[in-house]
Length: 115
Image (spheres, rainbow, N blue to C red):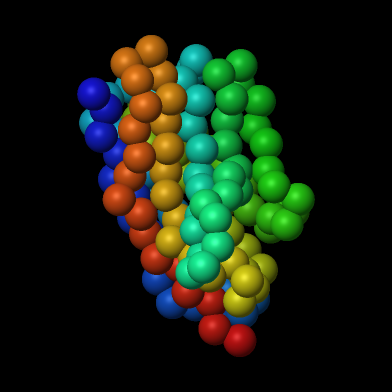
């Protein structure tokens, strides 16, 4: 079972940037699908960005042009580069992986964007 550990969250002003990291205890290279989800208070968890088993990177419309997903296979780590952050981006961000070994969630990292 692969374990995931997120880091990089924090408090930032609107317009600022953050880089989230998700380090895996094992390989999460293709065809493992990996995604970043977020959950704001009182809202459902939503997929923000991720890479499919086929290697396609997708984003939810609200973050297109501001967030960038990337994967470093050598480091078993995925990243979420976030720029031009908005207060509505405030949430706990979770990493999720779905591979041949099963599925895993990280513990989450808080991102707070002040106006």
